[in-house]
Length: 405
Image (cartoon, rainbow, N blue to C red; front, side, top):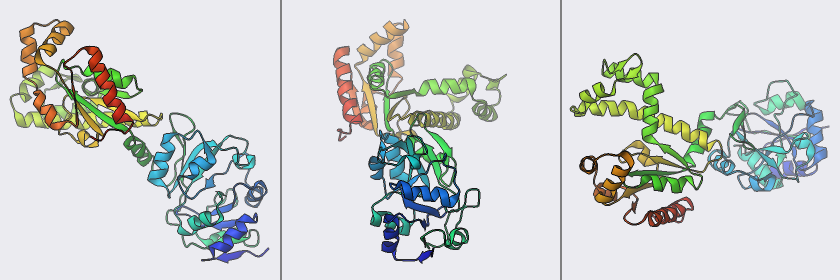
């Protein structure tokens, strides 16, 4: 057999693929050994030429995110998010396989890895032939993966129909493989794309809603509305208090800045409060320290939630306005209510006197502050049922993308 060396004639390479031939193709990672992924006989030749064990499935090269619907079933939202962010690029996304894919590609399984390579010539081949390409690395099994057409030729000259010369591969490392067929999603192979970038992309895809407002305004009812929609709710104050009990690094930073504030691993809240509440600069330093840890803990919670297929999360915190977290929110909802209604709720909930309840309320930001800074306001001035209905309507609009605010 004569192996054709192709530089620019992608049409010729497409003819070879359609006829069941094998063509080595360049990618940004390593060269692949490609065949028509819907032709069982052509795929069988890949196994034979490579000496690849039949129990190892093959991934398919595809031209873009639309292929998720062509060759996958029950594709989760995360797959579209990752394909939109990283394709073309070194990421293989494993999804449930469409029934049109031959069993030999799947090696007896029911999932398939899809990958869109960042190579102009290979993308052109995919679009020209109109077929997915089964394309493992173009090396005999166990041998180093080739990064140039010459290395492919050293392995397979005279054994395959063609080699497309796309120059040297840029990355030289296989793609990262992520399995989205189960939750939490998991990395099957760490390759050229770092796991941290994948986690950030999934986290960024969440719809984030901030909930803020004064004590007794009715935030609990708003948060219940979100929870009933399957939204993750993160209590910013609870995160902070957990860190005060569990984060040795945060406590060490506080102790370094405020000696004596931590004793035997326990934060001395009253002692620390006495030092910072009368000193604006000290209070700002404490806020800088704690905020970094709170934000990191919230980020980790969001990343874990996104990896389970979650789509929306809410962050409940009085102090959201003006923070870095605020810039990441899709909506910031302020909950307000008449003062006497808030007083009544505090008295009933905490067993305190009405005068003390008023002092607490008046020490916080007024409703006008939230009205000036939030993207949406929920005013709780009717019955609980009326307020819950208003919450449901607003959150439906935000989560379904109907809101223009």
